[in-house]
Length: 224
Image (tube, rainbow, N blue to C red; front, top):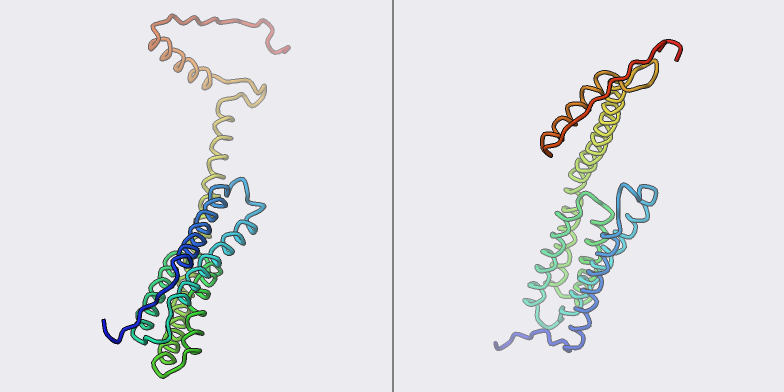
């Protein structure tokens, strides 16, 4: 097409960018697989920092891609690339809203390098585009703050509810143990006997086997 200049990058540079991008993506899977919230509560801050670090690296890779494909000669092409970057940065909004550090770690390196490059290129169109993206970034971040606080509060309530459920289960288990034992001797009581007898009768019926019950009377039981 006459008058339109496209971005011609060496194929080796594009392949190198793709290799780096895929390497970071694969590296993010390692801490994800190794993380176990129940077993690693004492190291939760370390896992959070790793998550933010890999998110920042991934955002930086996309920010570098913007610089690689941003030619100064074609304003229309630059506008298209800028709209693409806005779409990429907007994807982080839904993915990282609950974690503000991770959101900024991805959002900032995606947006800032290209905006700086637009200002360096200069010209009325590029400066206006850079300012528009800055305004877009500010509006998005400010709009996300109340959503972030609501999500964090909801997550906190879920943790509290889970802890209450676990505590209730422990109490129910304790009550069950108390109901199945004699408070004076600590031995299994009649309720426990009836439950075990019913279970053994059903097992004997399923396996077509006989069941024997031995009753022993202890003389002078009070002495024991």
